[in-house]
Length: 179
Image (cartoon, rainbow, N blue to C red; front, side, top):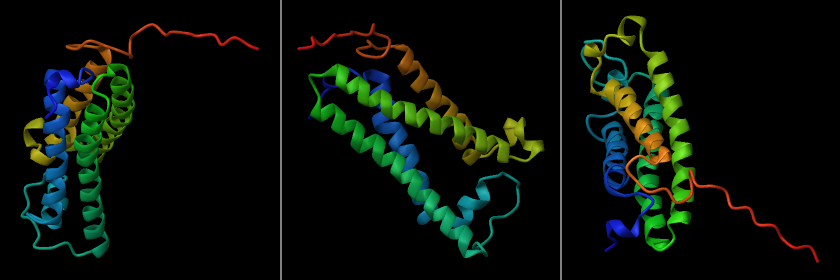
């Protein structure tokens, strides 16, 4: 079983967050959309309004879109759990390679975080945008928690709480001799 020292590019809290908490927090909404409480609940909770949850969605296109959104959530969870572990297991003695791959993944996820936060916030009705107390768990998950994840990715890039092996290191230029 790999130990923390096998994954120097993702130590301590970063490992807990990105190998355990984030995959769970992205896979769980997929199950909630597909199985219980279901697509109608998931769709209804996207914007808090205090009305009862409908028994079902009236439009099959909306149901399909919610199920596909669940698939996207599951994909994010699987990337975090399987790909990040593969990096750790395949490259235990190569922190530079670990960090380069993790950095590429984190850059893509950070860009997705920004757009997710933006579109989740823009989609809220004007009277809810700054009334955080009226946000439900779905709104806080889509905005507040994703802001936290983005902050942790940025902290990782900045080298906060970890040793950097690639990002933030001086570039090494090697010149090839022409024959």
